[in-house]
Image (cartoon, rainbow, N blue to C red; front, side, top):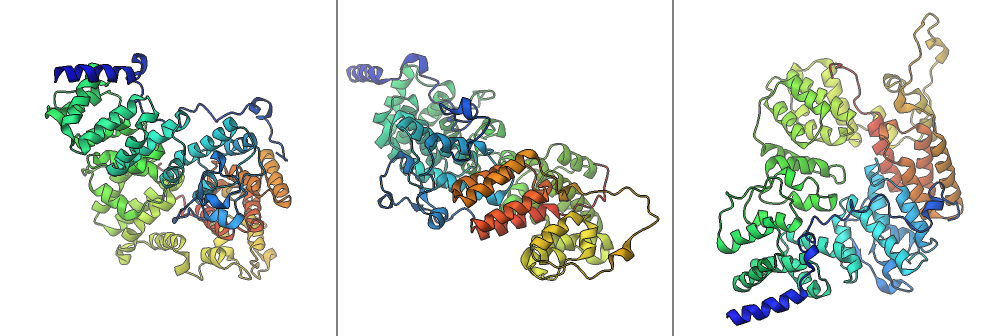
Amino acid sequence: MKLLFILFLALFSNSAFPEILKNSDDNFINLTNEIKGDLKTSNDVKNDKTIDKQSDNETKKIKPVLIGKLEIPSLGSIGVETSLNKKKGLNLWSDFTANDAIKYLNLLPNKISSTAYQRFLNEVYASTSEPPKGNSDEISKFLETRLVKLALNGQTDYLIKIISQLPDSPKWERWKEWYVIHHFLVKDDTNACLKISNTINNYDSIFWKKANLLCLILQRNLSEANFIYDVMRSQNLLDDTFETLIDKILNEKELEKFNFKGKSVTPLNLILFDITKYPISFEMIKDFGFEYKLQLSNLIYLQPEARALLIDQLTTVKDINSDLLIKIYQDIKFENSNQDEILKSLNLNPNGLIRAKVWQNAMKIKDSSEKAEFILKSLLIENKHNNSKTASELYIPSLLSLKTNSLSQSQTQDINYIYNLNNPEKFVDAPFSQILLDPKNKVWDEQFISRHNAWNFVNFLSYLGMQSPKITWESNINFTSKDLKKINDKFSLNISHEDFILSRGISDNIIEKNYLKAILLIGKLIGENELKFLNLTTFQAIDMYLTDLDFLTLRDEFRKEVLYEKFFYSKNLYNEF
């Protein structure tokens, strides 16, 4: 046996990764942040300042790419068939050069402020297409850029389907590693280990050796696992955390004496923590990208506080059901806090843990009027932090359950208004519902417009086909008032020079039938700006462009999203924040 161990040790030494890299290969698999800035092309330095004018709802049922439909299947054509392909075909990128395609993709922020349009852009990034023109390196950078965009937006379903089509080569190793980690995190050990078995001989990285050892343990092949573990340890190939956790599993060692505080937590180590039932804190996972967050939220031994913080981050890229939020909030230990203090904390540092405490305190309030006041205050703060939709959906059931005879008239009106905003189809005659659902030939409500000081919005209502009320406007002139005229910034018509140029560029590309360029430039025009402050000139232009492009469902979703933000409950009832 000793002779066999020495022989195996010699063979393993020859194939082991060089000593200088032995403990760094399993570092955090950063699929996004390690790319410093945007992926640059060889012509970017010259062209960064200007882009040459020449140069609906995320599909739930994603079909694998049908290579037979493509003229020349290649790395650049890798993707999935989406509803965008069904509408615009397979020539999305064929008129681009790879360098121009990268340039247009990098023009977009990692995440734009519109959830509806970001879902659409995710389809753009994922869709299969005839490839752009370029050499193999340029095509690889083009595909890498798309993968990074999908990772930054937590699009794990798209990533899995695309990565499974990538060749097993060093160029794509980090994506293959993510593929394995993903399956481990979602408890799909079979597919993770199958991938490792089929791939391990293609790479020299220590990651694959560690992952293979993990598979041996999960498959209960403990004798071989112990043997491999001893060899790797003798070669000093294991970081302290990984070695300690494996030792715990194989030899039932105690973990209590080992201090993990401040230790780097790699994805493989995190999986071992969950296997050994070690509590996983937010500090251990805070640096993981969005391509990991959904899977991490399902770890069994993730601490409740960490889960709340993680799910809160996920609300920026995914629709999270209110029932799930409530379940997560209920798992957190209740702390009876001063109402004003907890609301101030929400205003200063809105995160999942603070939001959980706000919800817990709201649910403990017995008096209906007091509860309504507390929740309405919190919604005003959430609106300030662009979380009004998620927050209002969370609290509407509680607001509707309050005793109406205990509420003030204004509280009742506010609650009904918020319910209307979230359910316009239930109030078809309400002013907001008429604007949103069926505006053509309807008469806009003068009091509604006045209440929001949204007079600039009247032009947009005319564009929608709404009629002006029959009012003798001159009779409303106040000849004695000396008040300064105040303008609501949410309904500004002012457009910047950059937005004007972008808008004209979109219009030109639609005329020239460069539809994908127009789609990407619309994403840039929306950008990261708060939707409530999107100027009406740009808003109307985008609405028109989406109509011209025949993306009517997307247009309606985007319109609803913007109008919701602009007309959300914004009465300045409370000024202490």
